[in-house]
Image (cartoon, rainbow, N blue to C red; front, side):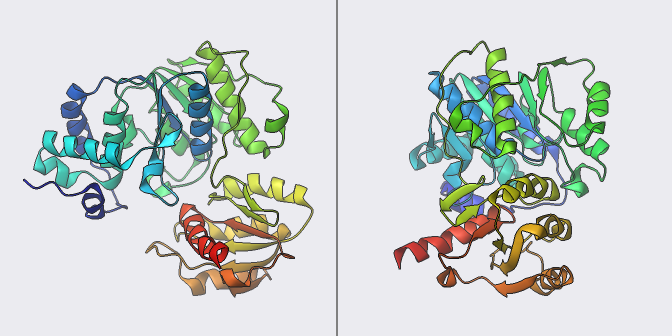
Length: 380
């Protein structure tokens, strides 16, 4: 059998699906696990903050001379971003070597049924073998997530909110319960917006061991971070203390797309739901200026609520085109914006002006689309 390249193979897979057949990833892992020696598994579930928490944790572990694979999703520009090993995105050669191995081990039936995310998860699991730690970020984050196919040693539950309701449930209680049921052993719960999350924890995780979330005096560099990133860093420091790493100096990594300043007048963030908008609004308030919001949204997100939350800090909204079939229809988005009495215009990268302040927000897809345009702008 001629093995397709990884890119061609993944392109044959659907990125999005309506239901999960957990038996496919379960059966695939039962075969692949014979070829993998898993490290200590730290599973990260939640609605917001998974990516930043995972990258802080992975980076600090590497600074502590540990071998670490961090698996996250989605990527912003390059697929390799999803698998980060000891400080760098995975190389093409390692990816294709793992792909070749999976193609030789798994049956054609399983290979055909595995989704894009499930197959990518298996690549990460295979490549994690012999490392010290595997920091495994959940996708949708429920008990039937592909990442939950391996037993985790420690679970980090980040901030929970309403998102992916069609999969996880339409209340905070249901979403919290399905995410918490992915915890196998010990867990740490980050600061929560909704108080009833703690009630769910007391019920669902009553037989698990909770790791204490400690308060820390952060270094001067960390104190400059947005509050939500400071909170994620404190979770990481609590985890490291539990793992017997303490009293060490650390350097903060640059997080791509997390309140990232590309220029003095330009900030980008991959947030996409009301929970993220509330956290971001607190940071925008500190800026003491109005922003042009470069925005678009997936149709299943609560973009009306997001825009209501951000509207006090926005002078105008510019809709950026995104090549994604899930993007909301432009006329619907424009109608919502006008109802909020905000000015709306199409986004044009060549019309960016130094005297204006821009905030790019809406999803990984929005940030990816913007960065591609911004690269052209910088080369002009």
